[in-house]
Length: 406
Picture 1 (cartoon, rainbow, N blue to C red):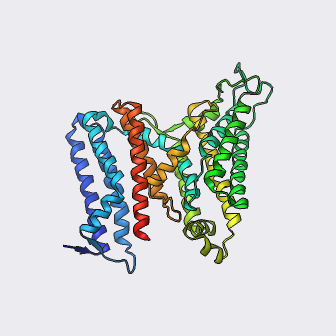
Picture 2: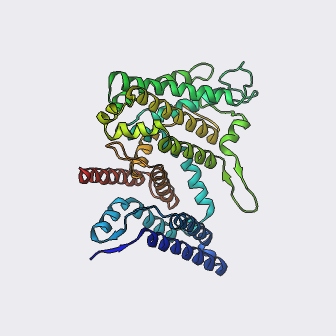
Picture 3: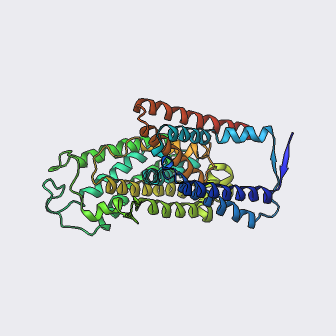
C-alpha cells in the first residue's frame, strides 16, 4: 500500500517536526536535568536547523516537483541508502547511554574541529572520484606541506632550527611556498593521467612514493637530521589553535571550523556554478559524450589534480599549525579516510555523482564514530575493524545503486 503526499506537505511536516524538537529541547532545558548535560541545547540547535532548512523549502516550492510516494520499495531504498547514517545514530545513542558526558557542546566542537582538515582533504579528493579515479598521493602531499611550512616558520631562539640562518619570514610566504610545491606534484599527477592516459590509481601511487621519498630526504637534511620539527612560531600556531568566543564556560570555536566552512562554500560554487565544475561532472558521467560536447579533457584532468593537491597542501599547513609541529609521517593514510568519507557521503566510485553536502556528512560520520568509540574506550584494533566494515558496506551500497541504475 502506497501513500502519496505533495512536496509542500512533506516539507511542512518536516518544518513542524523541527519546531517540535525545539520545544522538547526547551522543556528539557528548563527542567534542568544535570545528567542530560548539553543535550537540550543541542536539540534546540538541531530543531532550529530543521525548521530553517525545511521552512525555506516549504515557502519556496519547486515548480513541477513530483509528489513523494511512501511504500515498501521507497522505504527499503531509504534504509539502504542511509544505512550507515542510521547505524551512526544508533551508535551515538548507545554511547550517550553508556557515557552521558558525550552530550556536551565541547564534544560537538571537538568533532567539528577534528573534521575540518579531513573535510578539506575529502573535498580535494572528491574531484578525482567524480572522474571515476582516485588520488593515493593525498596523504603524503599533506605531510609534505606540513614539513615544508614548519621548516621555515620556527622561532628565532629555537635550538634545533631547520634553517639556522633564515630570517623571520612573513607568515604567508612559507605557506604559499608549501602549497605551491604541493600543486606541482598535483600537476605531475594530472600530467601522467592526461598525457599518457594512465589510470589515476597507478599515477597517484607513483607520485605518492615520489612525494614521500622527497619529503623524507628534505626532512633528513642537516642540521635537522630527521628530528621532529618543533619550535613553531606563535603566529603560525595561531592559524590552527585560535578559538573564538572562548570564556564563561564556553570552550570556544576553533578557527579551523570557519576556514573549512569557507573552503567548502568555494568548492560548492566551483562544482555547481562554473564551467569547470560542469566539465568535471561531464567527464565522470560519460567521457565520450564529454569529448563530443567539446570538453577539453586534457586541461580538465590536469586542473583537477592541481586543485586537489592545493587543497591537500592547505590541509597540511593547517594540520601542522594545529599540532604545532611536523614529521615526514604526517598525513599517512589520510587519503584512505578521505576516499571512504566521500563514498559514505554518496560520491560514486563509478564517477559522475557527488554532492558537497554528502561529503560533509561522510566526513562527520567517520569522525563521530571514531571519536565516539575512543570516548567509551573501545580498543583501537576494534575501531579499525568497524571502520573497515563501514567502508565495505558503503562501497556495496554504491555498487548496488550503480547496478540498479544500469
